[in-house]
Length: 367
Image (tube, helix red, strand yellow):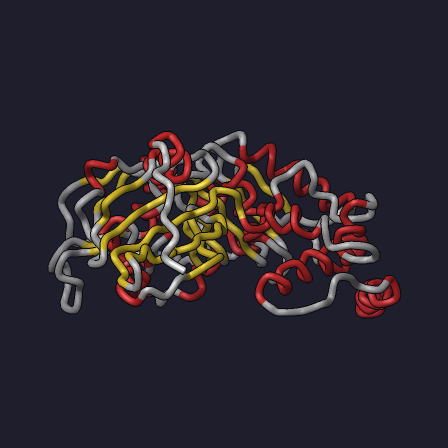
């Protein structure tokens, strides 16, 4: 049989395939040079086609692998990537001319991964995850996009979701307190994702992981040649990276005392100088801090500045540990099961009531 001839598609059909509100398209040639980006891609990433077309794709999308697909001809289907703090699904497909690879196309779905999982599990069948969701006994997050991950039905968790929505409507600094592992960053990301800043970066910083002598250069960046060993072209600091977005400072109690007045100044003026730099840099970011320590006690002992404490503690919430909200355990168990199903080939579609009760009993015994 001869090769089937393909119909000539009307331009309106081609435009609909390449450019629609649900996904963004990018087309490159064999060398990885951008030939086309859809209007939806322009809008979502804040790009202009005339500034992107003609450039190597890694200059516009540094983390992409589209150029490798164009080179090897090996498709990447359903890859999970993080964009603006949200998980998205992207497929990168080689464009073939017979047996020859002539380019590649990337299609990124704007719908987030977890929302798609909620839609998927609804069709999993009797006695499975879908029934758990549709029965009314499932996770009580229906009013909130699934990607915000504040999962649970307890009164405390409902209050946390209400707080996240309230805080997202303001630009005030937020202080989140609670034990290690209770979900402080989850709440911080929810506030960001619900806010008008959701298109900007969510920059997460663990203050306890930064060596004391590097705090200033990490937060403010440095100018070219600022010190021996510095990157030749200089470096943007964390505050600059968070411009128009949110910076989350976890373990804020570990911020060195000598760094605290500099932090206070940035929060007050929203301007700073890079290390070794002479040009004032303006920034616009939202600050969310978290700690598992008593900051007021640290203020009293002189280990944390009182004025900085007042500055970061405008809105505050304490996240209770899981042992104080055991009613959330079934919801969390199913939520984690969804996550595992995304990454593992498994036929498990549910958790028995006996196992869920065992999980809850375990925490009550520990407490």
